[in-house]
Length: 330
Length: 206
Image 1 (cartoon, rainbow over the protein chains, first blue to last red):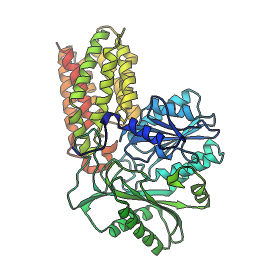
Image 2 (cartoon, rainbow over the protein chains, first blue to last red):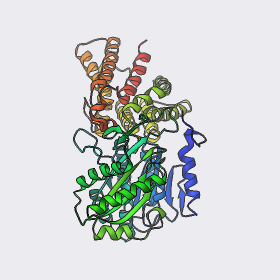
Image 3 (tube, chains in turn yellow, blue):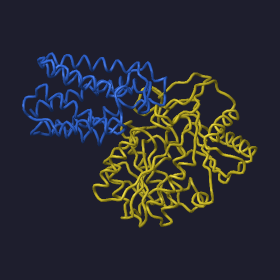
Image 4 (cartoon, rainbow over the protein chains, first blue to last red):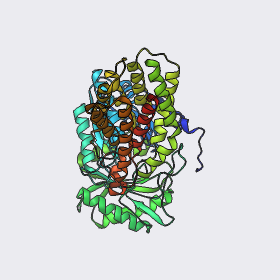
């Protein structure tokens, strides 16, 4: 069993949420009895955004709560969807009567739990819509899979739908903006070392000393292939090729680029990857309007990274650049 | 009747908690390695609630089980088992159950799981244990078998169904990301479903 800086595996989420709220300098609060982070000024007179999912992906999603982004984040146990009753409580706490948009990552568990919560909210007369983020190009989108996973691209959905909601747009318009991001965002990741759940005795998967998993998921789900580790420049090229092909990006397109650390990757390595990603895109005549490097959607202590490309137009650029109090997306 | 049902669920909870690591290992091979941890958390909570409560009917025990699992398990298994037990609570009576009742109960449970999970037989899920078990009950009813024999056959069918998931390729849930690589592993959901059926049947055969 690996070492972890925790107290009791059963309390990791609750203790983490309390710590996040304390670090917010009075911007956020925890909903009593639930692992839910809310804007302290909720409900705000606008469409409310609620997201969430399993824990272990910090800073997602709690750190994205704040003016210009989410109104509430619901934290499930590690890598486990939150339950319908908790999601419903979050919805009730942030609804100002202008409706609520649920931002869900495409996983079977999340879909079922958020769907049950939406049914409960509807029964209570709350106007509610949902969008499902599925940006991971590593999964073949076919009848034979659950479909593509929602990964780091979700953060752009939070930012852009959040800006749209802050502008006073109606629920349907906010949903349209979120869907536009989903249509234009793609991610692919790689891992060189696995992660371990706080309550489990073994790692979620195993890799040989000289192996890496291309297309890794944020819960350690397998990707497209296990191959011998290569130089990071080659890895970046391969990830970007798959993303650009899928998004049909061409010369002179404008994009946002996110280099995301999976939790155990030194920033040094992320910057080296970012250097290559910038050069690769520039050589193809693709314009990087916004560049993010850091940890946005992690996988506990997994060593690896993901690259996300969001294809921008004028509308998306304005919303991406709109003001927010969430430091990571400023 | 309520007390007997309560005892059954207390035993089921013990079995799930005992098998926490086994289920988690099965899940680590093709999923995200939390099936045992999640179910054990929900059943531990259920144990507390059952031990501290008194119940008037079987239906009440099933309903409490459903709500406790829905609000404590998370993942996909919480809504799936929760919906199954909730559906059972709507049809189960307090009279002595005959084969016809058991067929109805199993069909209600399966209908709930299929609605929530949008899955069919053969997709390497808990349904691959539950559907053969239910089919076996139907066959026994049609052949007028006695209850004990029917339950023994049902348990065998459930075990065979669970084992058949080894050769299946997953097309639902996290295991589906593996594609062909999911073949060769027993499905953790099919396994927990078997454990629940086994506990129920073994404790009913006296």
